[in-house]
Length: 195
Image (cartoon, rainbow, N blue to C red; front, side):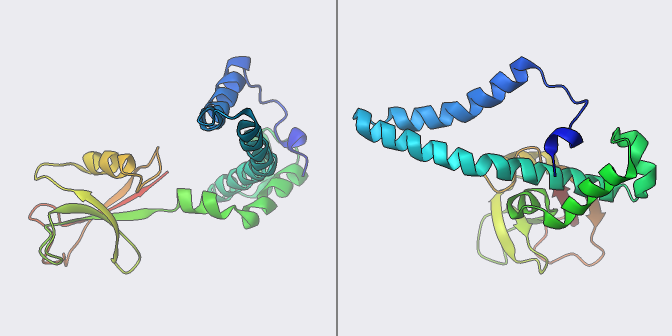
């Protein structure tokens, strides 16, 4: 699919381009600067160039697929999406929508909903913690919990610890009718978070 057709009408400012380039180059050049030998630095930069030659197109493809997933999430018919998307024709909407079936695994992982519970620590002889759990409530990650914490505190701490992607937000809060015995009083909730 031609990305130029699907992004027509979307302008980006030079300062936005510069910021994206600066962000990418900062990490690459900082890593290369660790090497004092110019030949080693050359090889490190060549390897980084190859990485970006491969990653760049994958990122663009992933963004197209994420756009498609966003359109599917509207529940609207393709014909009804032509005007609000600015794509102009149902054929262009259809082209993008087909990409939703090819979502990048990294994007899927970043955007999947995660469940958070609070543990008083008694079930594992641990300290009280905010815990990220899988579909069977097995612990995937955790950060310390202090009485009085809010879900926003948990999201901040879990993000800072690298257990949630930056930008994660609360999607749903559900009071558990049959909470676990290890959930502290007042924290018998299941919080769903996502990007």
